[in-house]
Image (tube, rainbow, N blue to C red; front, side, top):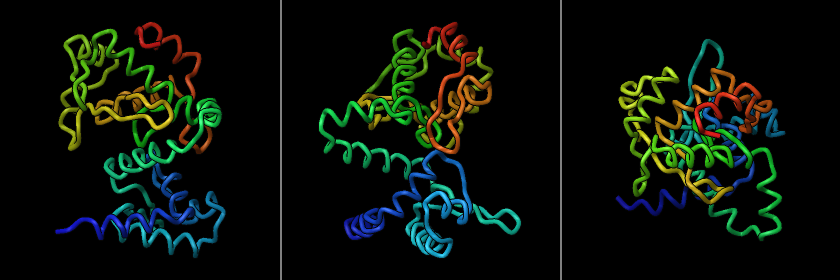
Length: 226
């Protein structure tokens, strides 16, 4: 089967600014109703429903029904990966003065990339994991070392359960704002969940941006990750 026609169709879908905004709103892995997405995108519920139907038909979004409500979310990590790659291509057109402004933005400092940490914080944490030997960098993945497994034990993360997830275990994800790799995959998601649950990280409103709490900063320093 020739994938080019399908690629062209997806390109036309993503060419609409409203649809790309909807995808951006869903990029942190959470699910939202059509009315919530309409409100945040500044469009009518009818317009939102039309765009959402097209995105679902293209397998970019899926719908979860809960009672009378229907919640929309990204169809999976592969969709998030594709959007991250497109973001990298898009920012290549930014001139250097603009790039410096982007890097000072809260989204560039620390954000959730679908379900794992990205931005300057995500890249710094990944660099610390490899520098201290917790992770070993490969061509397009990371391997968890014995000391890395012990680190996860200290964080009460079940390594075997993480390995059983139906996705890449520890993937190298190129950061669109830093142009360096951060840790993605099931391991990256497990660490992000852990830090959020322990309130070492705090979300900034409804955006994907996060910040390190004072409690989190101290604990991450104790682990040698900051």
